Image 1: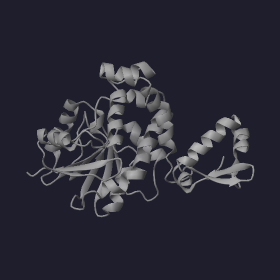
Image 2: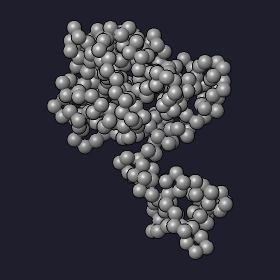
Image 3: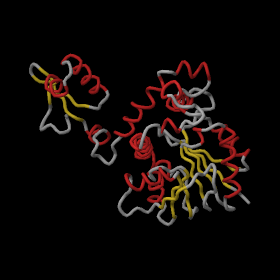
Image 4: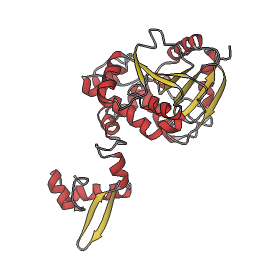
Length: 312
């Protein structure tokens, strides 16, 4: 409403258009001003509200950097799960059964629980994440030596596109489930796209040969044995001199943060089967799978990077 208005609006005007109480809307608008989502102009007798540059960039649906999909997914999937946080802590497992009536052993049933619309919300969430952090992840290490890069579970291809931009001499592709690939091509394609999509299941099937495999927000979803099985497969498939890039929200070894990573780890408890880890946790996983020479880069954003290679 504010974005399309010819000028700033009063709380009374906004309340009338959106059919809310004036008092409640005024409090909400003031809180959004405090969060720097909105601007306010004190005027004689009333205050006038308008959309901020931040809101125009990240909240407007028409913006190329819109986080609308992320907010919709959080609202309709993540928040309902968190109402059962106490049960998740007591039971030590996800709450998909209580929240959505789905078996806890297959958490992605909840992600794709109803129809294409639900899957698109999740894909939009993943796409939005790399709008914020993709460039920092792609450039956390110099990956120019890897000529063929495959993003396993790369969803919409947003992170892969950031890598293709950062390393134009490398070929970058995405491997994901057939339904995800079809939706990515239909709804998230870009003009002059340099990213190639392949259909497959990297847990059950073979993975294409590559110099670098990217696992972005994959390891934290699953139990340790399933992660180890995948990493061992990648070690066996990886070309000599090749490597694996993990992208996750890393905890501190001291257990004192970062708060965002700690919240993510709780979210893995209520929603999935995995957890967030400190660098030592990912190093141990990679070492157990046969990889060595593990390098860690904290980006200062929501997600960090861990690079490892196969020496022979």
